[in-house]
Image (cartoon, rainbow, N blue to C red; front, top):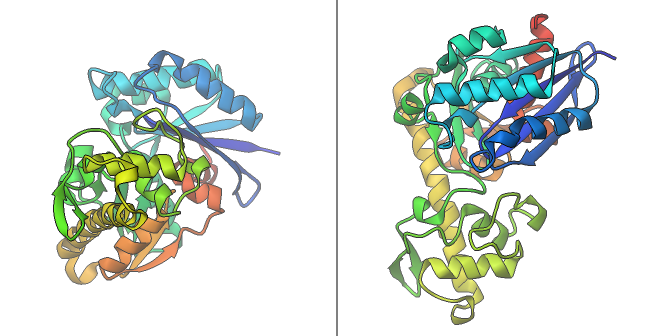
Amino acid sequence: MTAILGWDVGGANLKVARVVGDPPRVDRTIERPFALWREPQRLAERLAELAAAMGPAQRHAVSMTAELCDCFATKAEGVRHVLDSMRSALPGAPLAVYGADGRFHSVPEAAKRPLLVAAANWRATAALVAEQSPDAILVDVGSTTADLIPIVSGRVRALGFTDTDRLRSGELVFTGNLRTPVCAIVSALPLRGRRCRVAAEWFAIAADAQLWLGHIRPKDYSCDTPDGRGRTRSAAGARLARMVGAEAASLREREITALARAVVAAQVAAIADGLRQIRARLKGRCPRVAVLAGQGALLGRAAARAAGLRPRPLPLPAGAARAAPAAAVALLLARDGRG
């Protein structure tokens, strides 16, 4: 059976999806945490391991966001490192690189025009959504960021095409389900009826609030913990307590719960603010539906409702929806017929 592998190479996670059949469908996905900024020289090795786990494929499609890692002096350097690693991991395999222009490019072309393919994974997911929901806003909340992409009359209507422009337009919000430091989410938290400033330290992350509230399971806490300790609810509570200069034993359970809820509420508000910025720009043309993707779909759903949108899930299997860009580039390449 002909198979296509779609890759989403990020700075903190590697995702791959396999597409088979006619019409093409996603039959398997794998998501693996990998701190690229620590070991960029091991990227090819990790990609090869994932390729072996997925089995033979006739073609490969890749999107990326890894180029922003600070182990690279420039985005161009990062893009070329990803491309070199893909070629090393998949020697001789046909490889198509997805660009922010909504087209596939050869590896040599991508290497010559690295900024065209930098941070283009959102565009692939949006193109897939546009085929199924011609009037919608894609709300893809991952471990680190939220992509908010408007689609009007079947066309992607993004205002920004670089990370900087997307941050300005509200289409990229740097808050995610796991890795965002709490001190980057809030400057203060509620404690015993008063506002308590938080420590500007990497004491706790969004995953701690999510785990404490039961929104994720310990096995879903796939990134490093800030203190190197466990991924249990009690360990997460201790990290949250430290954000207000306390120890878990000095706080009641309901007080830690209030901290966690405030963190999540602030993330929802940040994403909803991006959505409102998009709605204000599009005015009467703005879609009323939000299509949810990514592992932070709970955050996306709450933000969509807060912004006056009707949320609905991306019509893909659960694993594929979590790894939406990887699934999207594979499906788009299958339909494109090139590569």
